[in-house]
Image 1 (cartoon, rainbow, N blue to C red):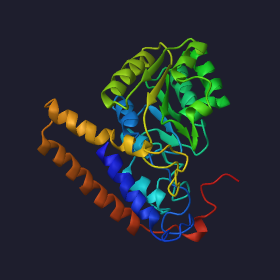
Image 2 (cartoon, helix red, strand yellow):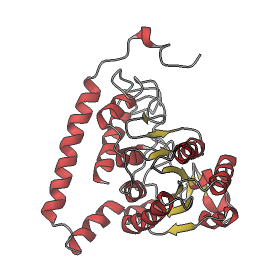
Image 3 (cartoon, helix red, strand yellow):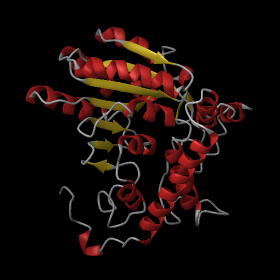
Image 4 (tube, helix red, strand yellow):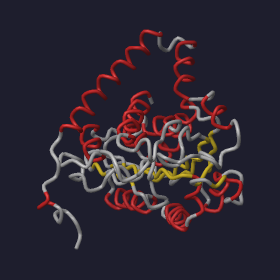
Length: 314
């Protein structure tokens, strides 16, 4: 969680270079949109702690925390986001299209579109008699997309080793969940497909870990999919540059008061699972890792113009 938060803080600083005092999304070393996942780190860590390299994970347009928790190559991912030749896709995909086959991770900027590829990976494992599960992370707004319902139906029908993790941060871009979704909690939708539905409140990494562990064990045993909705919170806007005028007064302050990383730090020390020195060492290790990663990405070579039409479908 600390590594992910530090990573995004570095990305945010790099993203804003050249974009002040007048914000222009096209300026700076990281042009285009940037979606940060700060606040949602427990969702990724609690689930991915159970996963192996052969397990498949798909994520959303807000993917960094999940990619980091799944073990995506940080240097290559950062070079990709900076559009460098050494990136995972040679700088072609950027931050919403991270792909690392070494650990079976991919993400998409299209809402709910990770559902199908994840279920396909689960089906392939089942047909081949190979071990492994597939996990699709989506946002709560994506549960209103057709792809969500289609995939949940077929995954349940075929008892695929599949999990759908819904990160409910309360907003689909700027629209509150209560204004877009007919049910207060999406875990109840699992009943329509005859699979377990689990709701995890409080953005609690321990509770997420427990719920995900049970669901993943069930999938590995051949008992089919599980739908898990996690209450989480987005500590930034939908994208960098979002002025967040749609948030009620005081909401952001209340969310920062419940920041999961300080809460986790305090809990570990209080429960004596770690000392203050242990936590400080973890934070120092993360900082050293990020220093090296960002130095590498910034100094990496730019793609050659003649490579522009390589590795693409025509």
